[in-house]
Length: 388
Image 1: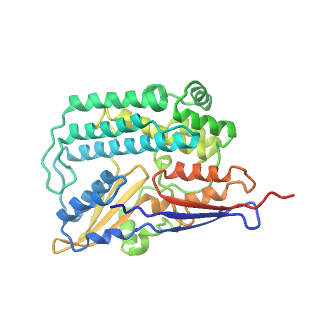
Image 2 (image 1 turned 30 degrees about the horizontal axis):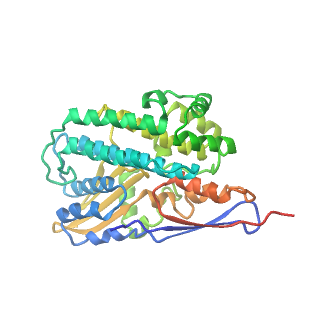
Image 3 (image 1 turned 90 degrees about the vertical axis):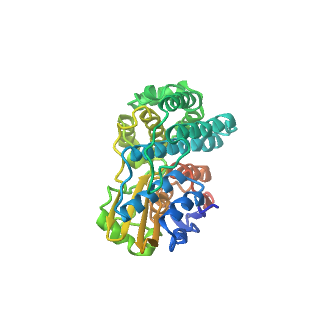
């Protein structure tokens, strides 16, 4: 079952150079009410099956919320396993969207063998960590990962990333710190990533879609819990009275990204490099499973619990309220609702596109894909004819 829905985006230029963007969504943001009246066990078994994208992140946020609501904690060693599985899913999502989406945008066939290898390695990494068991349950036994198999799969993943995307080792790519070094890498490699980046460089689209929007800050739990007490908050969330962005760009940092942001803000080139940077950093971190600090796990207030995790799209939040050991209320606040807010980052970025551009459809598609490559959307552009 697919609970993704679609977003309709209309970009028009009625009387001036600044675009007017209207956005409507058919995303079933209240679908989580399906779990109300169910037990925690039923919910944790069913929920990941209902989401076709980022099911690991959904399962992780769900179990963390339920643990908070029941005042329980997983056994020692389970949270690091969960965090590793989240990283593996984010790696798969980033790789798939690059190999599929970026190939499409430079007109080359998607590398089917590489896509199949990504899926195989994800399953192998997961199997080596969990032996087929799930760490996303309230009562879970300690895990004994097969680290030899895990490390072997990690090395294969690094080789795949080098061969299909970066052209160099992850560690070597992460040493690129200046715009000149980045341009040298783009000019020397022939992968799908450098083909798209070369195209952007040639068209001078580095700053395309640059706009002002605050990043989603570290959330104050009491304040978030109060906001979520209003059921419609998940439809068009705001923080401090305005929309915010939660994407790889808002949570990823490097010397190169710092240089790019000084030059191009949050424009198209910066967004694509942020995705590549996070991908390389995640793959490198698999060798040091306990080196990174996980994001805040959750919060409890009375019979309610909040669980969160970083998904490929951005921050995912679940909130559950219990009554007599059954779920009375279940809410999911997805990153898509932040980024596709009617005055959010997608709208503000599209508003900056030049009215007379002969590549408007392509530019808009690139920006939407760079912000959220997973969401289903329909884009309509009403462009003024050139002035005579």
